[in-house]
Amino acid sequence: ATHLTVHCRTKLDGYKPPAHWNWIPKIKEQVKSIPIIANGDIFTVDDFFRCQEETQCNQFMIGRGVMSDPFLFNKIQKQLTLSTNAESFNDQIDSSRQSIADGRERSAEAPNEWMLSTEIIQTFFDRSSDYINHHFATARTKQWLRGLSLRSTQAKSLFDEIKVIKNPIEFRQRLFLE
Image 1 (tube, rainbow, N blue to C red):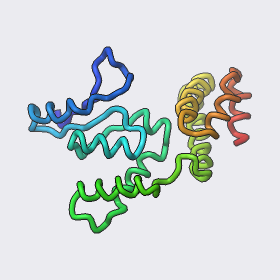
Image 2: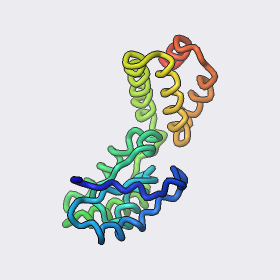
Image 3: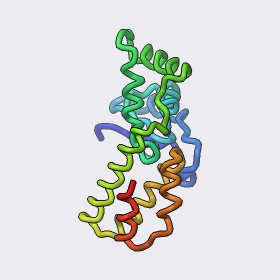
């Protein structure tokens, strides 16, 4: 193996919070020959920094967090690069955490983000339709909108309206009204 990704949960835990990031340092003590990648419960920029602080990892895998905020990677990157004069990665982390505490992190409800999200969702629907079929695309797009609706009032409003639409053609028509 060239690396090891640690999900920080047991099979019985499934996706149930919390991710047990405290396991990673113990694993890193035993596995020194390959990089360890931290994974689990990274839904916000602050989650990312808490995970980094607790695990001391410099590689991360993010799944459901990006499904509920497609711009999470951009937000993390922005925070990491805010401090261009930082002497080390940890100094950047400290500086970024302070900027978040000062309220400089962009809101998840920014109108531009929603507009870009709808374009991504529409593209996802069309490509899923082409790759598999319209029924698959409808189901997966609803699933994604459900995840987005946990953090976005616009997504919740759209999801509440289209979750009952079963016909893929009607679903696409409504989806593309956004």
